[in-house]
Length: 171
Image: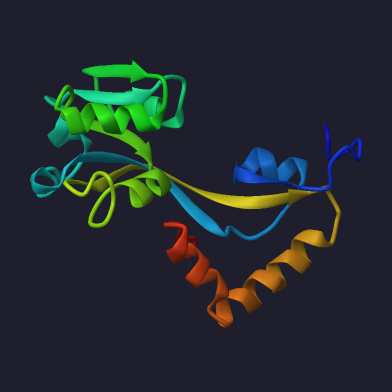
Protein backbone atom coordinates (compact mmCIF):
# COMPACT_ATOMS: atom_id res chain seq x y z
CA UNK A 1 0.00 0.00 0.00
CA UNK A 2 2.81 2.42 0.84
CA UNK A 3 4.48 1.74 -2.51
CA UNK A 4 1.24 2.21 -4.44
CA UNK A 5 0.39 5.44 -2.62
CA UNK A 6 3.94 6.68 -3.31
CA UNK A 7 4.54 7.10 0.43
CA UNK A 8 7.76 5.12 -0.08
CA UNK A 9 9.82 4.21 -3.13
CA UNK A 10 11.26 0.87 -2.00
CA UNK A 11 10.80 -1.95 0.49
CA UNK A 12 14.21 -3.19 1.51
CA UNK A 13 15.00 -4.21 5.08
CA UNK A 14 14.94 -8.02 5.25
CA UNK A 15 12.11 -8.44 2.74
CA UNK A 16 11.65 -12.12 1.97
CA UNK A 17 10.98 -12.85 -1.69
CA UNK A 18 7.72 -14.82 -1.94
CA UNK A 19 5.18 -15.36 -4.72
CA UNK A 20 2.86 -12.95 -2.91
CA UNK A 21 5.57 -10.28 -2.86
CA UNK A 22 6.34 -10.84 -6.55
CA UNK A 23 2.65 -10.43 -7.39
CA UNK A 24 2.42 -7.12 -5.54
CA UNK A 25 5.60 -5.36 -6.63
CA UNK A 26 8.64 -5.44 -8.88
CA UNK A 27 11.40 -7.26 -7.00
CA UNK A 28 15.15 -7.28 -7.43
CA UNK A 29 17.17 -10.44 -7.61
CA UNK A 30 17.93 -11.94 -4.23
CA UNK A 31 20.95 -10.36 -2.58
CA UNK A 32 21.17 -12.10 0.82
CA UNK A 33 20.25 -15.54 2.06
CA UNK A 34 18.64 -15.87 5.44
CA UNK A 35 17.97 -19.10 7.29
CA UNK A 36 16.76 -20.22 10.67
CA UNK A 37 19.62 -22.23 12.15
CA UNK A 38 20.10 -24.29 15.29
CA UNK A 39 22.90 -22.94 17.52
CA UNK A 40 24.45 -25.14 20.20
CA UNK A 41 27.78 -25.94 21.78
CA UNK A 42 30.32 -26.09 18.96
CA UNK A 43 31.64 -29.45 20.14
CA UNK A 44 28.14 -30.95 19.88
CA UNK A 45 27.23 -29.64 16.40
CA UNK A 46 28.63 -32.64 14.52
CA UNK A 47 26.35 -34.99 16.47
CA UNK A 48 23.18 -33.56 14.89
CA UNK A 49 22.42 -33.84 11.19
CA UNK A 50 18.81 -32.66 11.10
CA UNK A 51 15.83 -31.63 13.20
CA UNK A 52 14.77 -35.23 13.83
CA UNK A 53 18.10 -35.96 15.52
CA UNK A 54 17.44 -33.03 17.89
CA UNK A 55 14.04 -34.17 19.13
CA UNK A 56 15.23 -34.67 22.72
CA UNK A 57 16.97 -31.29 23.04
CA UNK A 58 15.61 -28.19 24.76
CA UNK A 59 15.47 -24.94 22.76
CA UNK A 60 15.13 -21.19 23.24
CA UNK A 61 13.48 -19.14 20.48
CA UNK A 62 12.47 -15.51 20.11
CA UNK A 63 8.73 -15.25 20.83
CA UNK A 64 6.72 -14.63 17.67
CA UNK A 65 9.74 -14.99 15.41
CA UNK A 66 10.54 -16.96 12.28
CA UNK A 67 12.76 -19.08 14.55
CA UNK A 68 9.79 -20.01 16.72
CA UNK A 69 7.78 -20.95 13.63
CA UNK A 70 10.68 -22.97 12.19
CA UNK A 71 11.08 -24.89 15.45
CA UNK A 72 7.36 -25.72 15.49
CA UNK A 73 7.37 -26.70 11.80
CA UNK A 74 10.37 -28.98 12.45
CA UNK A 75 8.47 -30.74 15.25
CA UNK A 76 10.70 -29.46 18.04
CA UNK A 77 8.53 -29.48 21.14
CA UNK A 78 10.73 -28.66 24.14
CA UNK A 79 10.81 -24.94 23.32
CA UNK A 80 10.98 -21.88 25.57
CA UNK A 81 10.04 -18.51 24.07
CA UNK A 82 12.28 -15.60 25.11
CA UNK A 83 12.25 -11.87 24.40
CA UNK A 84 14.83 -11.82 21.55
CA UNK A 85 17.55 -13.74 19.72
CA UNK A 86 20.30 -12.37 21.98
CA UNK A 87 18.49 -13.83 24.99
CA UNK A 88 18.12 -17.15 23.17
CA UNK A 89 21.91 -17.24 22.68
CA UNK A 90 22.49 -16.39 26.36
CA UNK A 91 20.22 -19.28 27.36
CA UNK A 92 22.37 -21.69 25.35
CA UNK A 93 25.61 -20.22 26.71
CA UNK A 94 24.35 -20.49 30.29
CA UNK A 95 23.32 -24.11 29.79
CA UNK A 96 19.66 -23.55 30.62
CA UNK A 97 18.77 -24.96 27.17
CA UNK A 98 20.65 -27.19 24.77
CA UNK A 99 20.18 -25.04 21.66
CA UNK A 100 18.39 -22.09 20.13
CA UNK A 101 16.90 -21.27 16.73
CA UNK A 102 17.97 -17.88 15.33
CA UNK A 103 18.69 -16.14 12.02
CA UNK A 104 21.86 -17.23 10.23
CA UNK A 105 23.01 -13.60 10.13
CA UNK A 106 22.86 -13.38 13.91
CA UNK A 107 24.53 -16.78 14.23
CA UNK A 108 27.36 -15.74 11.88
CA UNK A 109 27.94 -12.50 13.76
CA UNK A 110 27.65 -13.83 17.30
CA UNK A 111 29.12 -17.36 17.34
CA UNK A 112 32.48 -18.93 16.63
CA UNK A 113 36.05 -17.75 16.92
CA UNK A 114 36.50 -14.09 17.79
CA UNK A 115 32.97 -13.59 19.13
CA UNK A 116 31.36 -13.43 22.56
CA UNK A 117 30.10 -16.96 21.98
CA UNK A 118 33.25 -18.61 20.64
CA UNK A 119 32.18 -22.00 22.03
CA UNK A 120 28.86 -22.00 20.13
CA UNK A 121 28.25 -22.96 16.52
CA UNK A 122 25.62 -24.21 14.08
CA UNK A 123 25.21 -26.52 11.11
CA UNK A 124 21.52 -27.36 10.71
CA UNK A 125 19.35 -24.96 8.73
CA UNK A 126 15.66 -25.46 9.49
CA UNK A 127 14.45 -23.00 6.84
CA UNK A 128 15.95 -20.80 4.15
CA UNK A 129 14.74 -17.67 2.43
CA UNK A 130 16.16 -14.93 0.26
CA UNK A 131 15.89 -11.17 0.64
CA UNK A 132 15.21 -8.76 -2.19
CA UNK A 133 14.29 -5.13 -2.75
CA UNK A 134 10.74 -4.24 -3.76
CA UNK A 135 9.59 -1.38 -5.97
CA UNK A 136 6.23 -0.29 -7.39
CA UNK A 137 4.79 -2.79 -9.86
CA UNK A 138 6.00 -1.97 -13.37
CA UNK A 139 8.97 0.08 -12.17
CA UNK A 140 12.29 -0.36 -13.96
CA UNK A 141 14.18 0.22 -10.69
CA UNK A 142 14.42 -3.51 -9.91
CA UNK A 143 16.21 -4.07 -13.22
CA UNK A 144 18.57 -1.15 -12.52
CA UNK A 145 19.34 -2.44 -9.01
CA UNK A 146 20.03 -5.90 -10.48
CA UNK A 147 22.63 -4.38 -12.84
CA UNK A 148 24.26 -2.45 -10.01
CA UNK A 149 24.35 -5.54 -7.77
CA UNK A 150 25.91 -7.59 -10.59
CA UNK A 151 28.64 -4.96 -10.98
CA UNK A 152 29.24 -4.86 -7.21
CA UNK A 153 29.54 -8.65 -7.11
CA UNK A 154 31.90 -8.69 -10.10
CA UNK A 155 34.22 -6.08 -8.59
CA UNK A 156 34.22 -7.77 -5.16
CA UNK A 157 32.39 -5.01 -3.28
CA UNK A 158 29.34 -7.03 -2.24
CA UNK A 159 31.34 -10.11 -1.20
CA UNK A 160 33.60 -7.88 0.92
CA UNK A 161 30.59 -6.22 2.57
CA UNK A 162 28.98 -9.60 3.19
CA UNK A 163 32.12 -10.83 4.89
CA UNK A 164 32.48 -7.64 6.95
CA UNK A 165 28.88 -7.82 8.21
CA UNK A 166 28.63 -11.64 8.53
CA UNK A 167 26.04 -11.99 5.75
CA UNK A 168 25.52 -14.88 3.36
CA UNK A 169 25.09 -13.66 -0.20
CA UNK A 170 22.34 -15.29 -2.24
CA UNK A 171 23.54 -17.51 -5.06
